[in-house]
Length: 171
Image 1 (cartoon, helix red, strand yellow):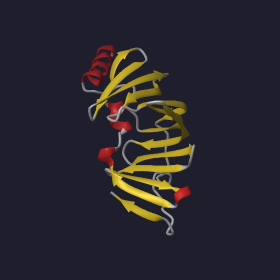
Image 2 (tube, helix red, strand yellow; image 1 turned 60 degrees about the vertical axis):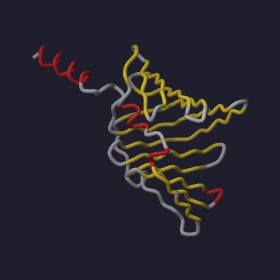
Image 3 (tube, helix red, strand yellow; image 1 turned 90 degrees about the vertical axis):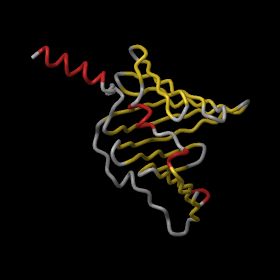
Image 4 (cartoon, helix red, strand yellow; image 1 turned 135 degrees about the vertical axis):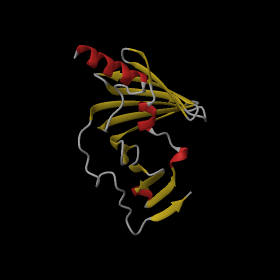
């Protein structure tokens, strides 16, 4: 039995599974973007279902609701009364980034996605921080708090509701 368990664990590592693989992720985040001499800090919450999609709710500095699913991103901006619909190709996919991360040490991982290097720090096998520099030279740090994984997420949370009076912009 011990041999079977050891072989199973080793095969998970060989075939790309890691402790950052998840069915769902729920939590809070603080995202800091540094560009030249400017720094913007965003806060919000997230709900990600690896099969269905993701929802990032930005609360500060202004509210934005961002939905990822089926290779599409929908950004709802209540203050501007608009929704932007675009392809996922222009946005990082956190599910793929975490799934493909390679372990560097106990709590440190690194992933390359769309030619961008993501440094990932974990705590208790959960993402704690993701740092990267995008293709425009902006440095980003996303810090996660109150993170839990593999909990059931209502599909209602992951489904965008665009008010009928909003302008819709498609890219």
